Image 1 (tube, rainbow, N blue to C red):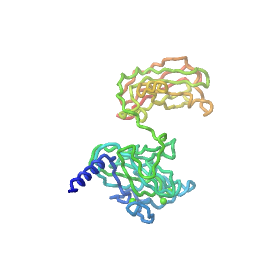
Image 2: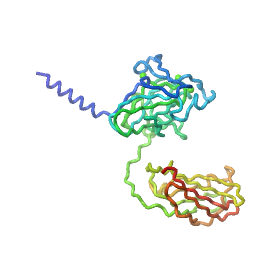
Image 3: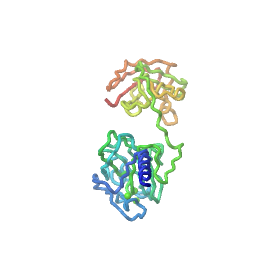
Image 4: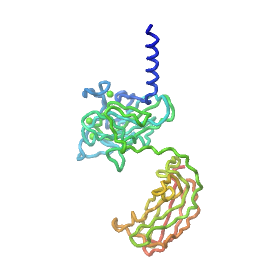
Length: 355
Ligand SMILES: [Ca+2]
Ligand SMILES: [Ca+2]
Ligand SMILES: [Ca+2]
C-alpha cells in the first residue's frame, strides 16, 4: 500500500516550508484606508498587464514629471513622511523583529520613484525615503535614499515590529506619479525577490553585536591639539559622557549635540561649529566603538577657503577647564578664553537632546 509513503513525503515538504524566511506579502491595492489625500490620491489601476493580483496603485495627479517641473512641497513632493497621501494596511505579523521593506514599483522618470513607509502611525527614520532608480518596468527594491547616496542604499529600509499580531503598515507619498504593485516585509536580510541582484559590496553588513564594557564618564576636560600654525587644523576634544556607537538611548550621533562658538572680543564675528562623536578619540586607528570623546575639527569651518576667519594658535595641548559636566538632560556650558587676537571667546555647549 502506497499511502503511508505519500503522507510521509507531504509532512517532509511541510517541514521544509517552515524553514523558509518569514515573509509578509501585501498587495499595494489592498489598503483599508486612505488619509491626507486632499491634494494627492492613490488610485487603483489595472492597465499594466504584468501587475500582481491584476492591479496596482498610482498617486495622482502627477504634476512633477521632470526635474524642471516646479516642485511644490506638500503637494507634488513631500520629504516629510505621513504628510501627503497616506495609505493604511492591516497586516498580521507572525513574530516580532526587524522586517526589511521591499516594494515592487514602476517608475517612468526621475520624479516618481520615492515613498515613505511607517507602522501604526509612526514614521521611523529607517522607513523613510524608499527609493528606486530602475525605470519603465516593475522592479523590486529595498533601498533608502540618503544625503550622500541619492540612488539609495540597498537593505537600508526596514521597520522594527515589537510584537506579533495585527499591525498597521503605512505608506505615504514622497513623489507623485509613483506606482506600486506589491510590498513584501522580510525578516531575513538575505531574502531577495525575483530579479534583484544587489552586489555584496554595496550592502553594509550590520555590525556584530558586541558586549560593550561601560566605562565611567569623562572628566569634562577639553584638549586642544593639532599643528598649531595659522590655517592648520586644530582639534578640540571634549572628554564627555560615556557613549557607544550602537547606543540608542541616547544615540550619540542623533541625541547629543556638541557645539563650539568662537567669538571675537568685540562680540562679532561669532561662529558656531558643530562637533561629532568620536568614540575614544582615535577610532580610525583603534576601531573603538565606544568612548567619551567628542571632536571638533575647527579647520573645517574656519579655513580661508570658505571665507571664515581662522582661529589663531592656542597654546599647544592647552587644557581648557570646563565646569564639571552636569551630564543629565540639561545644558552644560562654560566660557573660556583662547589666546588669540582674533577670536578670544570660546563657548562650549554640550547638550543631551533627549531625556
Ligand atoms: Ca512626479
Ligand atoms: Ca506614474
Ligand atoms: Ca498588485
